[in-house]
Length: 329
Image 1 (cartoon, one colour):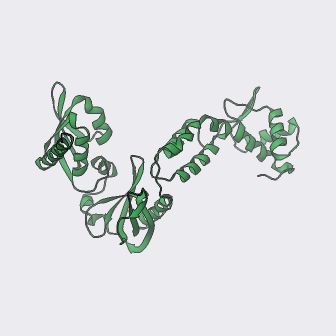
Image 2: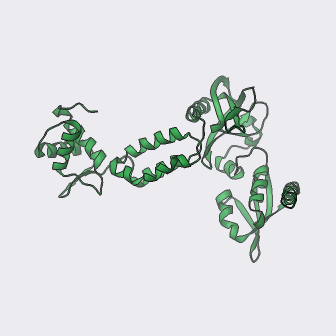
Image 3: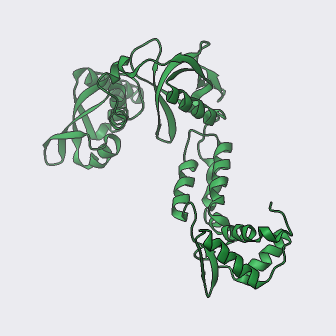
């Protein structure tokens, strides 16, 4: 709250009122500003003082527009469309707790003033959306960012849900991991790293981590991680790990229905090749994590047939056979 009765603060009080109550669709007259000053701050002034202070604010660089309708603050850090995008990003982020999501959304709404807040009533659906129960997620992100920046190892407890719908440690021992990158995928945060005991890449859900701690020991150089020996390309890595499964990447050849083109681009980007086109089918080559490809092929089973590698084809065949037996028992 600003100090009341202090004329030296008048320009800041007027700026606060313009931030809260004005926008391109809602202009404030000098009389309306005077009424807000009296009601909110107990400050008395006349129209000349309002005009002079608005002119002073404009000279200081604030983007205030005045015309025959009144005045409004045009220059804001974010316009309404940008704020909606940011709020929706928080709203549908599964990697932060519901309480933290509410706090962030309330802070973002303040950038748009009271008229904007009235336009984003959809945030009331927040309790119905899926958010993590882990209140440590934001702290874990900070700790992991620091460790990546300083090239240090991290330790943490990795959790899994039990039948009581509560998170429990997956094992007694702490995980010791070399952290390299944090990514967001399907509304969740993941750590791309290397589990100390092995030389391959592993992915860890950050909302499943607790007690994250940066260690004094330096992390393993990227060059010593098998999957990164030829350099690390994040777009390529994400395209090959569509479900964030760990494990090796394989070259896959499959027959897919042409109407699946949108889904192929959504999941793999444009980093796949169409080797042959038939009337309603196409022969496609793509590189992907083996486990993820199996899951994807099962998901789009009626429209996809994996041809190679034979090992993957057999695994899919066994899964389909198992499902057939379950549903025909």
